[in-house]
Each structure stands twice: as structure tokens, then as C-alpha cells.
Length: 488
Ligand code: PNW
Image (cartoon, rainbow, N blue to C red; front, side, top):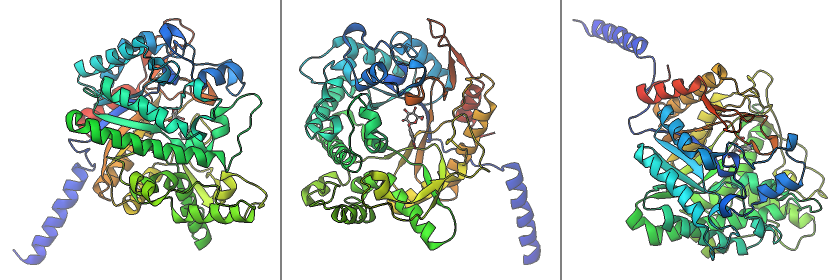
């Protein structure tokens, strides 16, 4: 045969293979999970010795949550944990990411008194998961700070660093023989850069642009210390991995103009780099440092409102990750904007830029959760480039609606699209993403949106005292993806 014919034949053959196998597969060692968090599901807020957290106080004493909703009962997972494990099993996934309620184990936050009931509760869940071949993944801090620490400013007070690390160390002692994946913090950007909401009390206002950076500074130090404790005292025997989880909404330049391209990058650095850069690269991102220092100076501050790390601290924080946890929900168009009035002292004015979402992007049950799967792929590409291709575990991604309907095709479509974006990132961009976690196992208390927004793979009947759970259609879809390794 002539060379030409061979080429022609092989071309036809490869088109045929592509047609038959039009789809990428999830690698065998790629893991799937589902997630929840303590305050959003557990209930039993004051049962059997549990202490009060800031979210108990916020829901009881402020009106930021609609319908007077609270987590007092929530999904009552305190009593329904066996059913929860059954549900995880039904989805077929490899792991369950849940969080510890600090105050269920240490009611006042201090480790001087252990509430054994809390330790037993989490031991039961962990043991049942393992019995069912499901890996427990624990988040130490998913926003429910012990209320005892709130009057002292919580994460704005340096005392919190030791208080957190003591608690974390106890958690490794109690559960680390069986838990091999730890997440110190869930989304510090959310609880620091929205500090007022997360500490909100009737007559207090916490100044943005000051206190939120103190929070950032203390969280990064607490994370690093916790990482070092685990590394030094537990890793050799327990053989687990530890990191933190950062949320990242993709910032796409609003146009091809150099200004908008720069604005999008500036926003990524303020929202994500603020936390990722000190841990993975070194120190805060330069653009963030420079902008806050410059605005602080113009405002008459003697030094930057962003507390600076010493060289020793920078070195201590750098490298404190075994993987990068990523929570992702949506995408925005970002534009350059005129500098805000210098008198305005806030994180938002430090960050600058302006953002909106395209009306052409399909919407979901929550205004800003537009469905933009390519945004996830761009994030993964950007992380690879900016941080030298770290291991990425997607620790949350999910679709909200307002009905909780069992016929949740839109959720299934969302998952298919975001799974495909992940597959393209793996196979076409060689991004090192190794897990996908669906938020959430079940409908639950969606923080300041109460029970109005529903992310669950399982429906929960909040009218029913038993909080009966029912699988939505997307559960079968998830199970089939996990089994077949393909998205349809
Ligand atoms: C996450 N954002 O919060 C939380 O980790 C979950 O507890 C929560 O239920 C889930 O997302 C759904 O909202 C986020 O503004 C809050 O980019 C805000 C953002 C991202 C995540």
C-alpha cells in the first residue's frame, strides 16, 4: 500500500474510534464524594451537652436569615446519622465530606472540658462510613465558631490561633486513626471578607478593610500551625493528608481590552490568591499587597491595613498543603472600574473592579449561581499555571433550586456539564484534579438563605418531624457516573 493510502486509512480509523468512544473517562483512581456541614444538617443545637456556636446565636438573635429559620433541628442528622450514611452509600461515591461542630466536642471551645457525647457521635459516623467502605473526610471548621470566642472578636483576635490548633490536635487524636483526609478551614474568604455577616450581632459593626484582613492573617497562621502539628506528630503514624478549602468563582475578563484582562486577574488574586499564594507560593500576591499598602498610605494609616508576615512566618506558611481543596459554584465577567473614593475603607474598594453575569448564561434556583461549566475548566487551568500544577480536590460543586423537586433534571444536567469540564481539564489540559465532591448530600440550612435554597441530592421533608429523606433523580445519575466512569 502507498503511504498516502495508509495515512488515509488511519485517519478514517481514528475518526471511527472517536465516534464510538466520543467521551473521556474518569481515571480509576479519581474519587467522587458528597458533602455537608455540621450547622447546616445536625440540629440538636443544645442537646446532650453541645455548646453554643456563633450560628446558634446569629439565628436566634438577628434577622439575617429569612422565615426565622434556624439550625436548631435542621435535618436532625444528630439523630438520623445512620440514614445519612445509607444515603451516601446509595450515591455510590467514595467519600463523605462532613464537618465537626467544635462546640459539640468542646462546648465552650476550650479543650479543658470534653463533651464525650460529641466524640461518640462523630466516632459512630466515622465507623459506620468505614464499615460501608466510604472514606470519611473531615472539615475542622465550617463557620460555626464557639460563641464563647465571639465577644473577643473571634478570628480578628490572635488568641484564636492557639485555641484552634488545640482543638485540631484533639480531633487528630480522637479520629485520626481512621480519618485520612483533613480540611482545616472551609472558605476563609467567605467568613473573613464577609466578617460582619459572620460575626453579626445587634449593635456591632466590624470595619471592613481592617478586621477582615486580621481574620485572613490569623486563619493563615492557624492553618499553617495545624498543618505542622499534623506533620510532626501524626502523619508518620496516621498517614493522612491535610490542607484547606478555598472558594473560587471564576473571573473572566469582560472584554479583550488589556484593562479588563488585568482587572480579572486582580480580582482572582484578591479573592483566591490572598489565601492560596502564601500557602503555595510565598507571601500575599504582590498586587494585593501593593494596592492595600498604597490605599492605606493615602488614607493616612501608618502601615498597610493588611497585616504583614515576617520572613519566618512566610516560610512557615509556605508549603502547608498536601493538596488544594477547591469549592466552585459560578462565573463572572470582570471589568476595570474607576478607583473608588479614597475615603472608602473596605475590602471591596481595595479589590476594585466591577463584575456582572451574562443574561445568556443559564440560571439556577439562586440568582448568581449561573451555570457556566467552562468557568470550572478555566479555574483548573489557571491553578495549574499559577501554582505549578498542585493536586486539586474539588471539595464542593453543586446546583441549587428552590423547589427541592425529586425530578431534578437541571441538577443532573449541571453535574454532567461540570463533570465534563473536569474531564476536559484532566485529559486535554493535564490538570492534576483527583476528586469531585457534590454539594450537597441533602437539602439543608443554606445559611442566610435559610431553607429556601436547596442543593441536595436527597430531598428532606422539613415539615415532618422525622425529617424523612428521599432520593432525587440525580442520585441514580451520580451512581452511574461513579460506576461507568463516564458522564452519559
Ligand atoms: C459554600 N461565593 O458557600 C459553603 O461552603 C456551603 O456551606 C454552602 O452551603 C454552599 O457553598 C452553597 O452556597 C459559598 O460567594 C458561599 O462565591 C458563597 C460563595 C461560594 C460558596
